[in-house]
Length: 289
Image 1 (cartoon, rainbow, N blue to C red):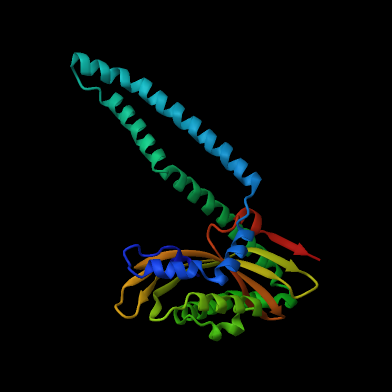
Image 2: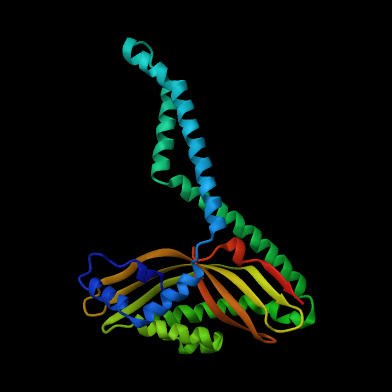
């Protein structure tokens, strides 16, 4: 919800002052404390990433060495002696250079991370949807039949509240603690003559990716992945200068936590931006009896 404030417009003459005000804010301290609890380093995950990166580096070095060994001698001989240009050898050497450039620019990391993320998310969506379709057949779980409509309605209200920087209209859609937290954050990001603009919001995806189901109580929790497009930016209302964000359409991915408050009521209780949580460990199917 507040991701755009992490990308200040460096050209703005007001940004430094605003950022300084944010850094001096007492609220910022508590928000960072909450973020730190979510972003604790997972030693096991870090170890796995280290070994994976090491393997990738070894494979890349071997591949580059092999390609050059197969192609470079022919190119050197052609350079020294002339004759017909070795197209195949040049292709192999060129391929090795492309691999080096890709690795330097971290494009391989980006592609691999996206593939792994999409694969994990698709598995979680499928399993969670299957589980929900099973339990909602029970009359006491009738609330699952309209959870999607609740999520979409909550999304539209939250987007409207973000633009107004006031969540009063969302109070009935959220648990009290989360509502109070969002209202305090609105105060933190509210400055004189500064307005937030959200244009062309379009909900692309709202799919369940994790669930905690209680058989004997109404304390169920469902995590949804929320993906949407929007122009989201903050402007100085005196001259229209963009201070944060961009007036171009961007894609946002977040995880929204919905908690069953009463028999047929779902309330938003948390929102996490993509990258703030390990989806393998946080979004699972849990049954409690």
